Image (cartoon, rainbow, N blue to C red; front, side):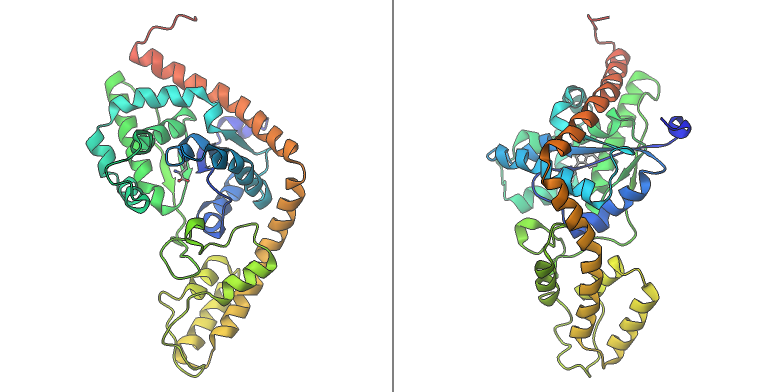
Length: 340
Ligand code: TRP
């Protein structure tokens, strides 16, 4: 254990295990996490319980994707010696904390959460919202606080969930008369959300507009080819528009040479630079980024037991941490403990 362990701030973040992760996850959070694991005590949660809140009809999908998401973590450079990868459903303290936290939030407040509202809309639940789904912000507050996390690296769509977590934290702290739980800060990348290759606001597997981290080089080429640009940029000589142009948004997110990108933008705006030339550059950037990730992922996928063992060990470590917080909260609320 390094000497700095005591003073390293704690990070908790996670992903629902509903499908393999894609470039949007990489730009929005994974890349940050790879860097942060060197300076923080980082826990990554495979959120299979949260995945069940809208996938109760397909638990097999949720189970299968536990290993897929773990593979994605390891393939992008999450190092199990520096970060703890753990499984939500195997941490009973999280479920117990969730039950307690539900008493510190109202149904009306849950219904007002903008992320939940959007997700309810997108899933077409109507009046038939699974109760677990409506209440998952309380469970996510349990995830975050169980690790006493101060920093939560997430995409911008998660900001309302961190805000709601902090509301619950303040209510509990006020109730028990001291700060037993720390508030958490969302760490959101400046780059903003990566759109889908079709130009839709969000990249998602179900929309078929995502580039998964496991994409083959042909997949990458095809995705860049059909990427949305400026529909009014018909001839190479025409001036083109950068705003809403997906190719440039991806270059902004992934090209390591921002000055080169600015130069391309100027030439594109001026006229004389064709979509194909810009797409060729983006394809090179993405091929170079994803090739080593794909190779590492394929090598690890050949040994699922090795990957599961990493998750198992991380989960056992997380069990102790989360149980400690649960005990603190139980004690602070004055609940009887018959076991010691
Ligand atoms: N809600 C996150 C997502 O949609 C997953 C998640 C579960 C999470 N628990 C978390 C994120 C705690 C940050 C912190 O992918």
